[in-house]
Length: 399
Image (cartoon, rainbow, N blue to C red; front, side, top):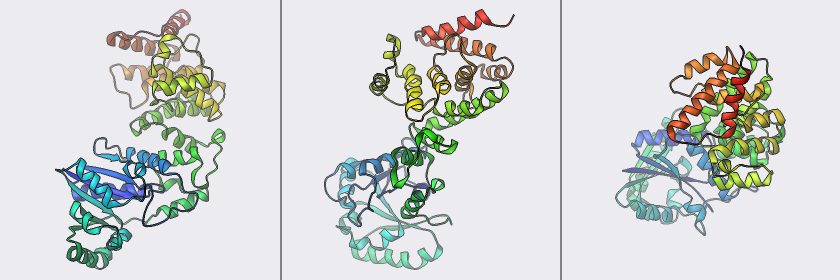
């Protein structure tokens, strides 16, 4: 197996890093890629007020996750957890011990490649891994990088390869940091990374989380979940707005409830219970034992207390999993948008989508019935509020 090793400070990780990684995987035929954020980089001091190593690691995990290549792309915290300077020779030694039968490829930018002879134990690095340098222009490969490759082969026995990147505008983390300090730069970052930066006030950003615009709120929400959930969250927000327009509901409230509805989806049961305790959320026995049921309640709590959302958005998020009797229009919209947004695929979903625009209560009844049938088939207990939602619609339906 061919494993790429891509180290750096990633301060912050940006789209240039991910583009380089994708092209390297294709050009070198890599089976896996491991990003390794440096804990204490030996080649340069981190700029003043840089995030802590753990924060850079968290951002790199979000960036890697955004590539949507599970099982092929991962992030290692070995250098962050290791004491002292983060020397590549030590990292490759550790990786070689983990993957003794695999082929390691060390990926690096032009500047790092051209100064490789100044690294600690370059001969050991060359014995452990192939070297792959990124090049953005024809001149890079024909002149400087070609000569450097010859020198490294002769001096250290290096096996060097140049990976030609597409002709894009060069981008550095320094430039991204400068843009962020100026209140710009989101276009150079994966949305989840930008959201993490806003939520934690990194790089001089001073976002008021209770007064975010749509783009920034979206980024913050996406930064709290795995990338595989992003399409669903965006689909719910879009569908909620469309349903709000159809049924005369506030489209702004629908968007905000939709974009935040799953923000705590991947918390552990212990984390959910801690949030419930912090904000005084009463739970029944079934809820207290189920992270799936709790994410709607903890999501509502953070929407209100972290993002400053009002009661209407709060309750729409709170009830979006179980439903309840006598739901408001916005509550019905979020419940149904979550159920049938464009990425959902199951028998009957097209009928449910059509009904959502014809008769909201009939759509709610169908959605709750389908949910109860699914739970029964899987042997999962029905929450009392889900049963209450169906009973209420049956008692109050037209005709």
